Length: 200
Image (tube, rainbow, N blue to C red; front, side, top):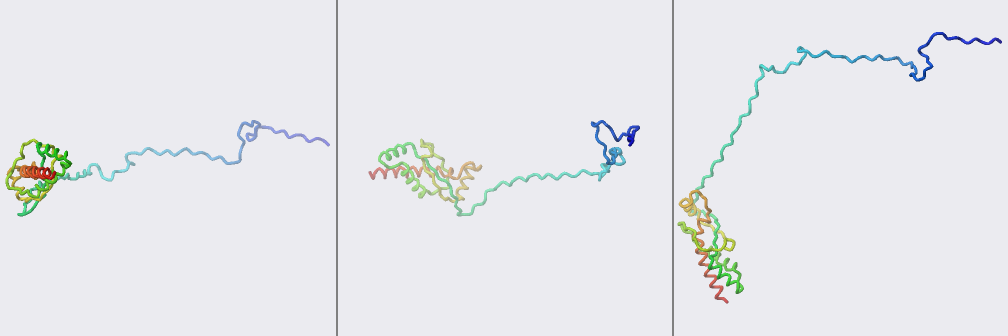
């Protein structure tokens, strides 16, 4: 039986190649890439118009600045007749009385006991007068070793003294009364020291 002759292929088919480094052909249809759409630059005509024309726009009025009103100066209130005002009373111990108090402590009576007893008596007996008495310039101990208390005093009397001797209200009510109260405290302290010494 005669052998069949081989078919001779003439020409070159681009779909077939013997170079295996190239990508294999596929049957998918090729999608042509479209270049990005380029928009024309915006012109003066296309620019958006402002809501209000600059020529007709009016500047906003600034809020009115309110200046703080000065606080009214407190005027002294009128004091009714018979009104009382609580003030601080204070008195220091004289230097010579301090030596007597140290002698009492040596006998067993603390100086604080004698000072407190004398201060309470002085507060009970104190009757303020309508005259200003200057604080006496005598040798005295520091105020931390003295006596302090309070007492209700006629407000009208205090205001009258302040008007006459302290119109600018630089001193306290207690300072206006100290010149009257301190000598009374000293006399009470001398009496208490003598009483305590007589008990021994």
